[in-house]
Image 1 (cartoon, rainbow, N blue to C red):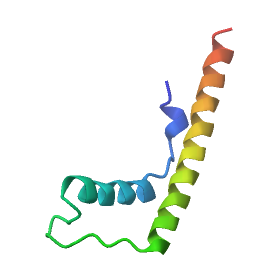
Image 2 (image 1 turned 180 degrees about the horizontal axis):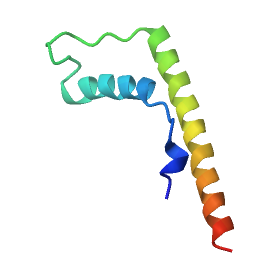
Image 3 (image 1 turned 90 degrees about the horizontal axis):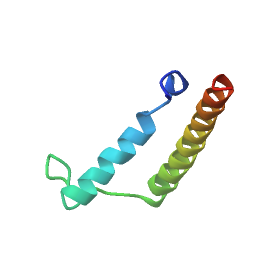
Image 4 (image 1 turned 45 degrees about the vertical axis):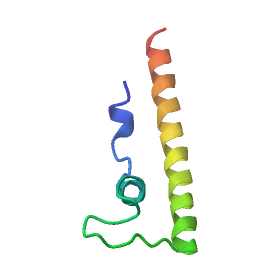
Length: 74
């Protein structure tokens, strides 16, 4: 349903955030190399900005797909 609408969706920033989250949640705050995960306030703000932008882009894409689907169903 969303295939064409998701082409070009930038997952790079979100992927890095998810990887760090995985280390924090599932590795008790350590990387695969057993190094502690360090988060700076700047990094947290940048992550929030990245997540907000990704979520907004995703929302637009979903609504566009739904609108296209409903217009073809008529």
